[in-house]
Amino acid sequence: MSYDISTLRKFVSPEIVFGAGSRRSVANFASNFGARHVFLVSDPGVVAAGWVAEVETLLVEAGLRCTTFTAVSPNPKVDEVMAGAELYRASECDVIVAIGGGSPMDCAKGIGIVASHGRSILEFEGVDTIRNPSPPLILIPTTAGTSADVSQFAIISDPNRRFKFSIISKAVVPDVSLIDPEVTETMDAYLTACTGVDALVHAIEAFVSTGSGPLTDTHALEAIRLINGNLEALVANPSNPVLREQIMLASMQAGLAFSNAILGAVHAMSHSLGGFLDLPHGLCNALLLEHVVAYNFPSAEDRFRRVAEAMAIDTRSMNGAQVKARLMTRIIELKKTVGLEARLKELGVTTSDIPYLSGYALKDPCILTNPRKSSLRDVQVVYEEAL
Ligand SMILES: NC(=O)c1ccc[n+]([C@@H]2O[C@H](COP(=O)([O-])OP(=O)(O)OC[C@H]3O[C@@H](n4cnc5c(N)ncnc54)[C@H](O)[C@@H]3O)[C@@H](O)[C@H]2O)c1
Ligand SMILES: [Fe+2]
Image 1 (cartoon, rainbow, N blue to C red):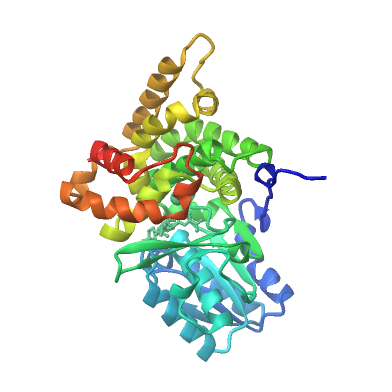
Image 2: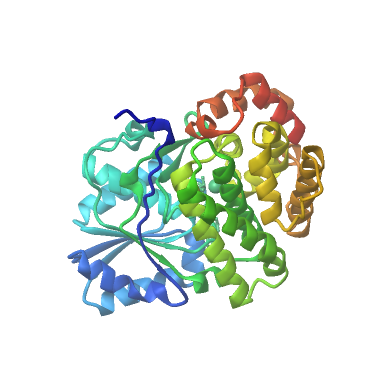
């Protein structure tokens, strides 16, 4: 019997332990993988927040050796991955743990790939390029977030091309994700806003993606509902543990959705922007979001109606134009309340940069699942509108 392969959907996820204190089981999981010498990846901000020392102590108290690598910058660079992989090899480590936001987690994924292939990370750009299994990988996210800890993506920045490239494979889904809302309590309000809006964009893009389906839709809609209902309150009160947990849960659900349904033009355009100007990923997404929604709306009106409903908009008596207007208003209002109102030109983007940015955005794999087919000119116009 024949079947239409384009209608099939798959769902990949790591083993997840969710809840306050879950990070404390890190040594247990590492030991279960047979670890003797753990390679711990993080960055200076997460060290300063105190989370790295805690994990080191937990590992050492369990009788494990630990080599720590924290030379990772936001938008992790090719050289950082290669330096980490060299230290991993020289230290004869056998399990990788990362604690941090998307940057250390993606760097750790890259280190695992290089360690198991012995080649440059640049050779693994694209979809399904990985042949050898990576060392066991345990991720502890400290932002909410990129959800790199549940995703099939690793995003690495190549300064030579001023471009962030994607590695997409189920081989970069970690073995274990310890999702502990407590570690997000040291994020300031601005970082909370940037990373929370990133999660909102993941959920919206996954829901309207051409790769969406019943396995991911419920996660995407629940993530939108949770972020719409809790992010503004959390940014006003960043130390509230209940709100932290709600946004961490939302981030995880958005991650499960986008990892499997893939993303769209916001991410394609924001990867290009983030690689070109080394800007915070969540901020890039935030500045592009409503412009891409306006562009995509006619191609996925029914899906956007459900996004609007998840954002607590009663659409029952509205026509398409009214739904679009209310959804745009709500997105702009949410961004304003959490303090993400800048325009691209305030970040240093100029009109003359747009052709370069657009060329790379069209090469990003996320553009393939955008609900509206995009030409070079389409992408240029959206950048111009966000300028
Ligand atoms: N792999 C994926 O699926 C995926 C998805 C989306 C984004 N990304 C990538 O993730 C990166 C962005 O990650 P991010 O937004 O999580 O930020 P990040 O990891 O770049 O961290 C930003 C800053 O926040 C600090 N920080 C992180 N957690 C903290 C905490 N709990 N307390 C105090 N400070 C903390 C860090 O030290 C750093 O200075 C980008 O490179 C982006 O492309 C990856
Ligand atoms: Fe993202």
